[in-house]
Length: 256
Ligand code: ADP
Ligand code: MG
Image (tube, rainbow, N blue to C red; front, side):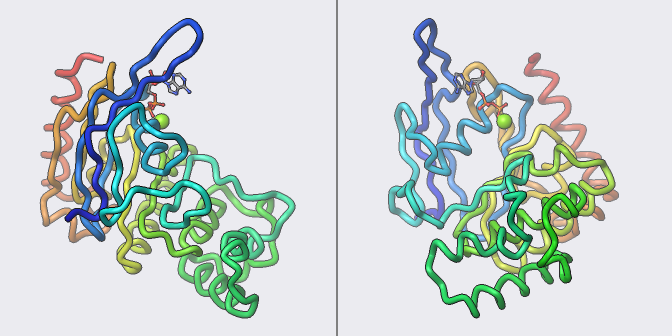
């Protein structure tokens, strides 16, 4: 039994004029604690598949099983979602933003506060609990978004290009933070990215997508030597360069 099982997912978007097949048959299995990436240029169906996994809408056909059970979409906190935009509420403090989900779960307030403080500390944002999102930098806001996502203790985290709006240095630092934090919590995660380097530096396994319709073109296992390193250090390893070249050539051969 796999932790997350994706079984023959097809998805077509219908409008009055046209039908657009975004996913043309994808199956894959993810084990507990694994970090995998969906890699490919824009338009190859990465966000569509992630949204289906998140239960935002049903696929045209196929099924998704989490711990052998179909996902329940509404008020189900087993899935945490982190996007390019942080979606923090501007009128709420950082602590209020982070405890929002906990409040929906009706945890007691004392416990909420302790949890929020612990998570803020974990993501390096201790002392910002009474600040408002506008007072924080882009990188700090994404760290707050990570803390908010982790607060409800999801079984799996879905990350849709969470670093792509950040400057390069902030992005590298946040890659390390996300990777270390998820490892320390033993979380399973799926990262969507169009950045080959990011996929190699962060993942255990990479699914390279081909488009029109979106399918998995090839799967790459990241060598242990890289997986043991933090993303930043992985980027300086010779195996990183080798895998980068291999994936680059594959992408070229797809002729987008
Ligand atoms: P990616 O995240 O890899 O960039 P998407 O999943 O966003 O790809 O899109 C895959 C394909 O589906 C694209 O051709 C896109 O134009 C199309 N698509 C995405 N969302 C919609 C939608 N809501 N309605 C119609 N077509 C869509
Ligand atoms: Mg996308």
